[in-house]
Image (tube, rainbow, N blue to C red; front, side, top):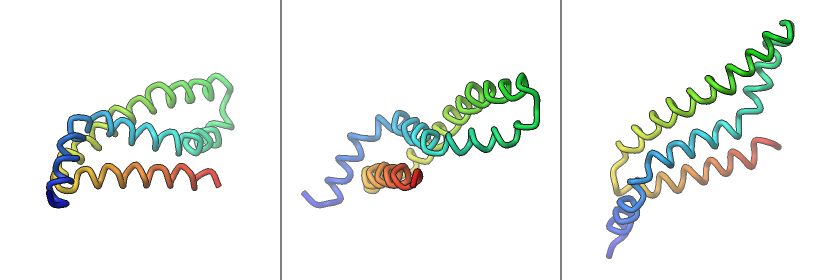
Length: 108
């Protein structure tokens, strides 16, 4: 068995989980950068009355993050379906590694 067939087998095993992995990618990015997004919104709404500030955070947390997760994971899943089998498993593994590096380095 050569390397290409091992990669294709791994890709065929992983591919049915593409939608789940896409959600995991987007959710992980939101966890990593969510604090920055919240901080930015806090700076923007600081001069406004408390009711507007609370409303802005409710909209961000419910509609904003929800929409980003649904729309973003759909976009990522579409990209994943375009990756040829010979590269798919490698791209998935490297993507999770990159997300791990981003998460580890972002808070420093």
